[in-house]
Length: 253
Ligand code: 48H
Image 1 (cartoon, rainbow, N blue to C red):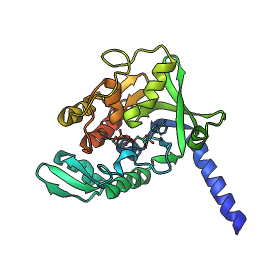
Image 2: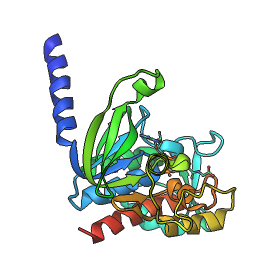
Image 3: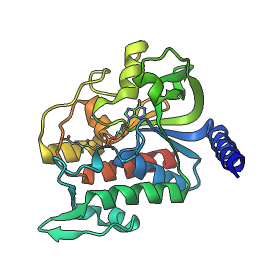
């Protein structure tokens, strides 16, 4: 009995890992934008893996605002909210949603659609071939946390999405280590600005794009890379951005 449990877990985990070492799309970060992208891509039959360094995917959505576990989204997100089966109440032009319910719905629907989530894995670098991103350099998140000198593994992907939130880590790493010009106004990472809700929500969508061949940006990472504002605890832009990045990638298939 004891050995069966261990064999079952080790065999099935490593077959899952092996099966996802070459994918169509690799998403870095399991916040709301990454999860929504994973759902819409997997739903269309794209082989997609999402890498999340924390134990729990969900990013900044679990905590609502200041740990008051409610979030706000605009009413025009209703098609996405309904697609994910999320319950809500209304208040003027907004929907009010329990953040734990919403976050778990995004995780459930993304995985149910076929998006594989590998948690506790940190992306530490990208793979570049002929000026195009073609994969990711991955390691166990605890290796980084403990400061252990342990070499990583490599995961190959036709397309990578940076959904790492405020820190836009994948794009920053690409820029820091390579003499590249990005698809931004300055050609560089422009950095996040202070809070301005309407501007931030609008530009999150505009900034969702391919920023370097093979590398797309979504969610707060899109605003961080393109020098736009933050918006506080309103999540419509994150949901729309995740859907937009999936649509952009699907339109190129
Ligand atoms: C693996 C990584 C790595 C890495 C980071 O921050 P997130 O929730 O991302 P978004 O953009 O989908 O949502 C942003 C939203 O939550 C938010 O913060 C808002 C709306 N803020 C507004 C405001 O004014 O403050 O999730 C990103 C995820 C996290 O779970 C990280 O752990 C993960 O990415 N991550 N995973 N490898 N190198 N870097």
